[in-house]
Amino acid sequence: MRYSQTVATEELGINRLTIGRWVRVQDWQRDNADRIEIFYSLSYSPELNPDEHLNADLKARLNAGEPVRSPKAMQSKLLGHLRSLQKQPVRIQSYFRHEKIRYAA
Image (cartoon, rainbow, N blue to C red):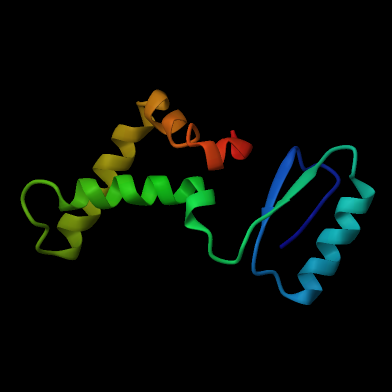
């Protein structure tokens, strides 16, 4: 992982970093304390992770309708749904409405 002075991120989620990377993150945070806020989460806490809402959405879509019978068909269905989601910002925003995930909005 590389950290630079030009990072525009205001929030950073950290989990499962090696000690070496953690020290670099701490150094970078100290130097950029006015620009960043770090949120700590448990090593496995899917209810706090907006990505898990996307995963659940994808799984529901992949399991809906006709069963997928080949890797190519699965990829096609998956990419189709992701492209559909790109056109639905309100749906993506809904992933962040859950009380425990609002911190990431």
